[in-house]
Image 1: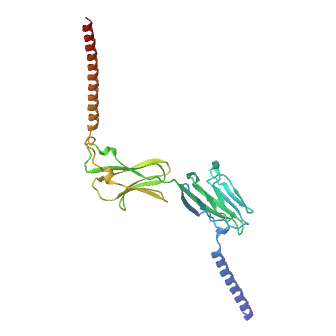
Image 2: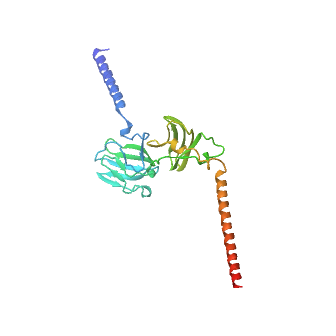
Image 3: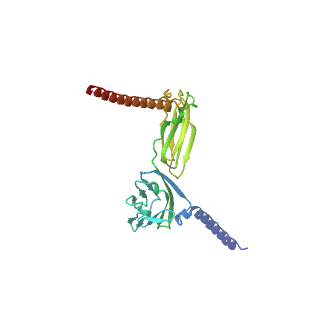
Length: 285
């Protein structure tokens, strides 16, 4: 084979190798996010009811058209088109006067409510193509402070005088966990999910126990706790109330004595009346 033909073939092979290397580099640099959006990536965001939250899709330009949608039905709630911002009230008017949108595409929801929870997506049009970002917002109710009370059934004939039974309770909560701790050690817990309900958790301790106990109510972003004051709650039951039927029997005896006294007074009054009448009659004669 002539030398010039061999050189030509070598040049072609070298060019092919360069093209392949360039193709490999382009494959590594290319990402479908800039064209179609990473529709599978969902960013989870949590906030406490009443606070504000900002959903940030990334940096946009004034040339972009930006659409924010909410819910499974994809209801349009905010729009930027040609630099003009438009805000909508959303389903049932729930977002009225509570949305803010800047020209970067960041959406702020003020005075959040639990009804704001759900999926959000933003579509940024322009540049190399559409960019889609997805969010899942969860708005948690504000937590009450758990209340600790003495179990009213503790003062019974079957209870041990050295034991103290207490209840930790919260009302009208959802998506929370209620727990008893001894120091930093978890003793017991109970959880509720979406439905609002009232929950309580029992704990029995020795009335002379010196260990620190606390009842903790928490959700994924905050918590409230109440310390158990054993000396205050776990006083010995008063003797008159301490066991079984002592209290109702005492009340019955007192009521009977009052009744007897009332009857005696009536009888005395009647007899006094008769005596006065008899004395008056005898004087007349």
